[in-house]
Amino acid sequence: MMTAKEYEASLRKLKLKVYMFGKRIENVVDDPIIRPSMNAVALTYGLAQNSDYKHIMTATSHLTGKTINRFCHIHQSTEDLVKKTDMGRLMGSMTGACFQRCVGMDALNALSITTFDMDVQYGTEYNKRFLKYLEYVQEKDLTCDGAMTDPKGDRSLAPHQQPDRDMYLHVVREDENGIVVRGAKAHQTGAVNSHEIIVMPTVSMREADRDFALSFALPSDSEGIVYIMGRQSCDTRKLEKGRIDCGNSFFGGHEALVVFDNVFVPWNRVFMYKEYEFAGRLVEQFASYHRQSYACKSGVGDVLIGAAQTIAEFNGVAKASHIRDKIIEMTHLNETLYAGSVACACKGEKQPCGTFLVHPLLANVCKQNVTRLPFEIARLAQDIAGGLMVTLPSDEDFNSPEVGAWLDKYFKGHASVSTRDRRRILRLIENICLGTAAVGYLTESMHGAGSPQAQRIMIARQSDIGKKQALAKKLCGITGKSKV
Ligand code: SF4
Ligand code: FE
Image (cartoon, rainbow, N blue to C red; front, side, top):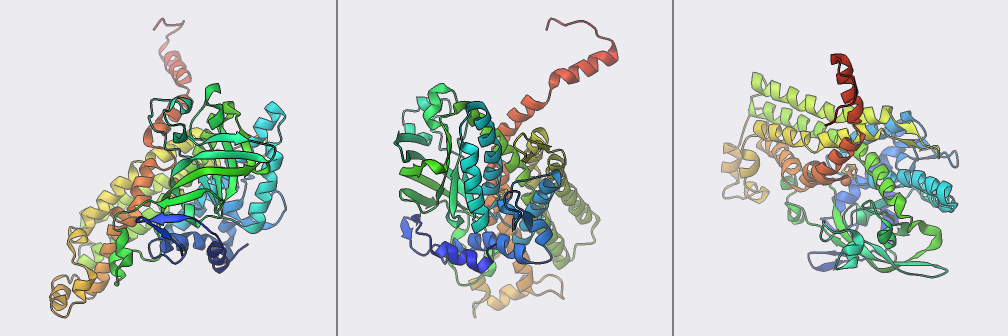
């Protein structure tokens, strides 16, 4: 396994083509806006070397028997799945941000299932290729970016109907060496902190969409791949002198648009090629895994609840009964998020290939809760914090010889607490609810791993409503088939 330092060094060797604010970024690792997101991924390496966390952060490879980072592991039991949930919560609580590496883990696990099932149906050799690739990823301890979301253009049209075919990533040509692909993947979490990019289709497909039913993996700095960084609320605070206004200057996340401008993929890295019947299944399996991964938000919730309690103490209101009740409510909501992720892990089942898949219905219920409860937790945190969270003057003003003393005097809370520490905790709450980390805590909770409606479709499909009706009818004595 790599150490955090080795991970950072490995990123320096990549020749990524990254753009931000209209300019090419030459030194991605040290860029002050990107750096906190790199630190968050680096912690997935750091904690795996730490004896206190090894039992969660590492696993035994089912391919080689070696100890590997859990982010590269294929789940072999429900215990593995529960540990994955706990790893997400742990990482979220240590970073207060999105640590990005789950997307690749979920892509690897989903592909372990789909490649096997495709081979059974078509006599192909995708699973063999995939396992070879997996061994390479595990051996080198790589971070993979799982790339699913196509830009999608006009949402009412299937991939092949789009006026611009590039709205869905597709094959342009093939020869005996491999394929050439074109298109883009949007909102790619952790893209420029990854060694590899694993592409999957984003929707179910019919025969006319064959050219879009693709899955493959490439080194992230392959010729023709271009990254354009998404910006976040308050991102340029990271360029300022003072660090307090960042709220959390250590960790963060990032998303990027990844453009594939006629990129070559060798055959040994192609894991699905025009098997359109399996596109939907791969999407569903990946989505189920990734919906479980949102235990990360209960970890960020731990930080926010801790911050809310702290500002209540700093303001001298911690003993008020309504504040206590709000902290209890935040805790209840946060544990509900965690419970959903644990439940779908415990109820996971072994697939024909040997991989354990989470319970799909419970995973979708878990993520549906994630689209709502963090917003309520954030609302309560802002209620407790008070308006000062967004009316505080800048760090520079506090350091000003002319007005700094007034600010220090008038923004004092409890006598035992410095105004500086009061500012720190307020800025952290601002960061999670409204700043750079709000992308990860709130918007990603809403849209990451699929927007709320995507889960509702899956919940409807799996709810077995007919069985529920039969139960009700039996109890009240309705017999025979109704005509409605
Ligand atoms: Fe992982 Fe959560 Fe970030 Fe998704 S939002 S990549 S599950 S930390
Ligand atoms: Fe996500």
